[in-house]
Every structure is written in structure tokens, then in C-alpha cells.
Length: 186
Image (cartoon, rainbow, N blue to C red; front, side, top):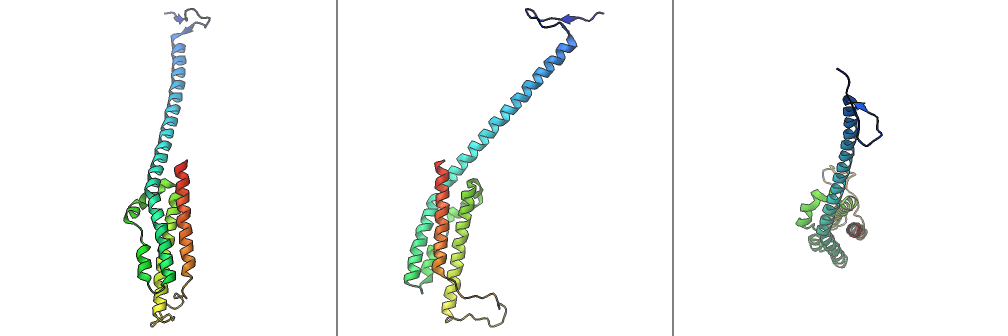
């Protein structure tokens, strides 16, 4: 049996055998499927980025009011602590993290750098609470640090400057708030 050649009508394309036409068709369809897969992947990546941006915005809108209230509580606690140093309980009550914000902490990674700033701000808040407690213990002990058993030798230190710690915490909360506000503007 003779080889049958197929030619395109109204074309100056050479006449080819069926096997060669099949190879050309396979090559063209493979190229088309690769292009389609690439553009579908790019579209999926764009959708994922848009979803991440929307998620970050929603968390930003949820977190920002809490940071504002924490900053205001810090300012009030600082003024109470400075005006009446013996009343540590009032300052400590103001330095609590709202439970709604605690519930959001696990998802702060959606905020990227702003989420890290929120974590740093909350850590400075916890450090400030600890410093106030240590400072009030030091004052209650008459300005001396007691270590009856010698277990804490070298660990107990003189109290730090709590007012400076307030300033550090307020700066950290303010920076986190600015980062979230900037992220929401984008």
C-alpha cells in the first residue's frame, strides 16, 4: 500500500503523511496546553494574592481599634503610676490585653510585618506588667531585695525605670498602629 499524503487546501504548505500531521498536531496542542496551564497558574496566584491582601485588611480593621484602646490605656496607666506610685493595681488593671485581641493573635501572620509589630508591642506590654510587679515588690520590701535561701542570687536586680518602660511600650504600640494603618491604605 502506498503512503497517502495529505495536503492543506488553498495553501502552499507541503503535503505530508498522516503520521507527520499527527506529530505536528500533537506539538501544537502540547504548546497550547502548556500556555493554558501557565496562564491558569498565574491567574490562581493573582487570586491567592488578592485573597491574602483582603485577609490582611480584615485583620487590620479588627486589630487597629484594640491597639488604639491599648495605647490609651497605657497613657492612663502611666499617668496613674507616676501620680500615685503605690497604686500598682490600678495601673496593672489598665495594662491588660483585650480577650478579643488574644483570640486574633494566632492569625497575625496575615498582617506580615504589621503582625510582627503587634506581637512586639504586646510583648513590651507584658514586660511592662512584669516590671511594675517587680518594682512594687521591691518597694514593699523597703528598698531591699530579699533572698533568704540564696536560690535567686545574681537573678534579683534593682528595679528599672518604669517610666522609660512605659515610653517603650507606647512607642511599640504606636508603631504597630502606624504599620497597620499604612497597610490598610495600600
